[in-house]
Length: 215
Ligand SMILES: C[C@@]1(CC(=O)O)C2=NC(=C\c3[nH]c(c(CCC(=O)O)c3CC(=O)O)Cc3[nH]c(c(CC(=O)O)c3CCC(=O)O)/C=C3\N/C(=C\2)[C@@H](CCC(=O)O)[C@]3(C)CC(=O)O)/[C@H]1CCC(=O)O
Ligand SMILES: NC(=O)c1ccc[n+]([C@@H]2O[C@H](COP(=O)([O-])OP(=O)(O)OC[C@H]3O[C@@H](n4cnc5c(N)ncnc54)[C@H](O)[C@@H]3O)[C@@H](O)[C@H]2O)c1
Image 1: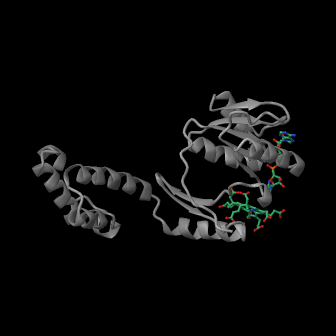
Image 2: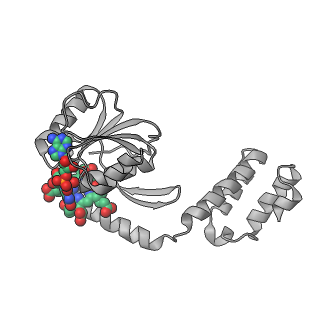
Image 3: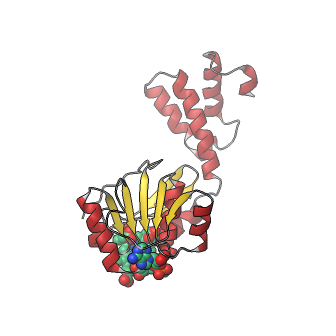
């Protein structure tokens, strides 16, 4: 199987999660992190899911799933402990062209959840296409142990610097070289690094930065 790897924008997209146990909770959390508009359908919900509902971060319908619940959804997750219910959710989704994941039930998944390492805007997603979720988890832990905790902060700074450079530097080989240089943390992890200074100097000459901003 050849899966298509993408990072999906879910902001404000209606997403339905059926079930509100431990497995559903982790899916709900990742959907909320992506700013999706989440609706949960389940007779019982774990405390965190109830708290999200009380805080207005999602809508919880306290009842069992019924056909038609996916109307208008962009994506659905079926995470009850009953395969027949999860498969019914998938069947409804499939008929309506709604992307669906029935947890731990590969034939009833349009997409799989990856194992993810996060540092701010940096995300490393690992998939084994279901060959070994345990391996995906182990690789996540290995990468997580190697990646500095402040990588997200550094990336945010790098992004700001890149926008400064791309605003003033025309597209071309020198700009590409400079951006690659900036992306090396060992070279540019500190404020006085030569390529950073050069980028800022150049930006100032173009009138993009004032002298105070350079300091
Ligand atoms: C990555 C992760 C994300 C997440 O779920 O959030 C994820 N499973 C995780 C953990 C995990 N899952 C299982 C174990 C026990 C060890 C083992 O079986 O290996 C462990 C490890 C543990 O818990 O220790 C059991 C399991 N999982 C699936 C089956 C069914 C089957 O294989 O047929 C069975 C057997 C059930 C049974 O025995 O009946 C199927 C799927 N699980 C997937 C994702 C999708 C493929 C991902 C991929 O391979 O790329 C896929 C296809 C569908 C889906 O998206 O659900 C998360 C790691 C999070 C992290 O920690 O980073
Ligand atoms: N918990 C784990 O560690 C674990 C690990 C791997 C796989 N799984 C699998 O993941 C699935 C979910 O596990 P869990 O631990 O989150 O289950 P759970 O029993 O804790 O939660 C099930 C949830 O589904 C809801 N539900 C039950 N029937 C429903 C219906 N008809 N309509 C809507 N909601 C309904 C319940 O109210 C509850 O919120 C199961 O298939 C389980 O085998 C669980």
